[in-house]
Length: 403
Image 1 (cartoon, rainbow, N blue to C red):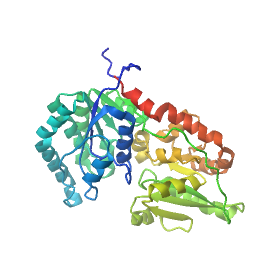
Image 2 (cartoon, rainbow, N blue to C red):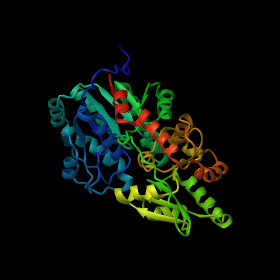
Image 3 (cartoon, one colour):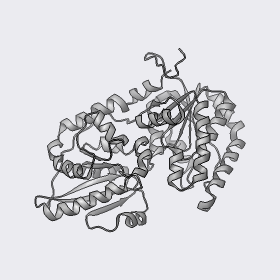
Image 4 (tube, rainbow, N blue to C red):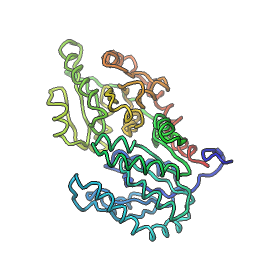
């Protein structure tokens, strides 16, 4: 069978080396740190070696290695050196050269692991494309690539035109070199087909927990109901967050039954949040809450808000990305309120799976807020559970990766 995506459901998983630019983190991580950790959990004994770097000087190699249940090899980087933003490209190129220095030793470790495939997993670092291809060439192992961000568009959004141009060149050649290409959303797969004529397969984010408990909402006195937002506050979410704050202001002035408030549980710099969203009496900010605190507050909120931007300039990003915050959102046991254009990945995902409380406009968002009580029940959480079992369970992830 020549189809690289042909799967034999009874075949064992191949053994992998995970090559990732975001070290897998058990606690305190976000984005690709969580994705990588959950992917390893899903693969069980199929991961023979993790190859990564420290990435952030605040992270401890020893802590990362001790938390992982598989061996890890750290290659060197320049995370301990502060480069000016204008020299970011120079730093990245130097890190590629540094990686080449480590490559001979690294390839020996990979061969000694006995793994049969490389699985390259990277977020917003386009230069990691070079490292994936170099490793595949050196080890002569089949290369699987997993894309979670549109690297070219991300560079353009950051005003890095030269990096965007180089990224397109690098990405095309990397994906053509890869044996299999996976993407984090259906929209991303379609985007890659259109952009590069490369066939990609949807690999959903892994959610280890598949049995959810419904948490009934507990009213307070006075009755002020929090709407929770989890994760980074950035351009993908800014305009619907601003809209929600405006709706909350109107709601609190015109509705006497109960009041609303927005809770942001985020790791984004508070100064940026105030700059973009302003100061508001109906907004609470929690910076880097612990896992226990995040779980507790998520389970106490009225709904969890999962927005995507309507800004046409963000179209590619909202179409291709898929939020890791869905892990915490599904497992909170509370309703999820989605808002965004129909082409965005999460509204599309909710519509395709017949999940309620999905608003495609400002008017629909106000209507959806009034629908929350009707859907706030055990049946909704069972719907979430069914979708997670179908797409995001550890068994489902393993089945996608069988060859």
